[in-house]
Image: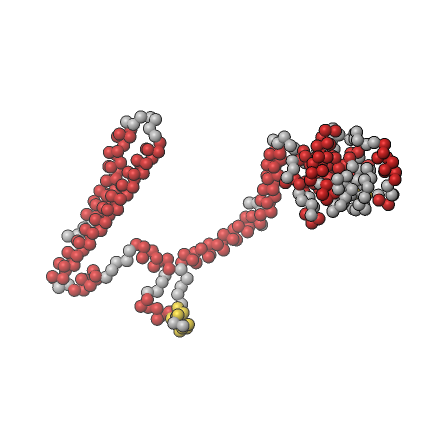
Length: 331
């Protein structure tokens, strides 16, 4: 009546059945044309795999049912012979592999023995027990300590691995190189480091149109200043010259209410506006705002005034007389 030899046979048959089913389906698949649809083949293979798993599960269930029937027959035979102790032993439920695993991992005390570890503390019906910490939790705890020591030594006390700062510096350098490589592929490659003042009248005229559209509200139509500073005198809050003006327009001055125009204008358009602004130097428009910031000397800064390199055809002689009439205190 023992089924010790029967179980391996049933399990082997169970394992071979899906393989045999798969082999039966392999012959037509091999004869299929080379251009057979990939997804059709994949769906067919998954279907056969699921079918094999279902059949395997069904056979395992049948095997367990057969083993239960065999066990009941053995218990009946032992009862007829009067061996009650053996019968009681058979009646004890066997722990599944999952229950045995959980018991070994948690070291939980059975409910019937909780009185042995009761600490005598009762909080609204909740008793405090002196249970041991689960081995898996202790393993993770001690493992994390060991990992921390190894990590500290490897990445902060030796040259085995890069530190967090080194990784940050490397990442920033890589990102900067990628940005520069991207900018190198763009047609509009002007930035605050390589920008130069434009002398072409058409380019400056485009800058003037942009200024009159977007900048005159704060700086006046002639650059005389208003909410923003006067753009025609020698004094600059954030530095004069094409590079400083380009930088100020690009990044803005949020604390003063000036937005970052680099998010709305192309770099070439900002270059045109900055070049036009430099042509306003010395025009002395009426109602000019009082000077703000520090006096900018192009010679000491190593740059030539943009007004000298830009030809303005609309500078009549009347402008000279207007400039002479402007009070010196305005500058």
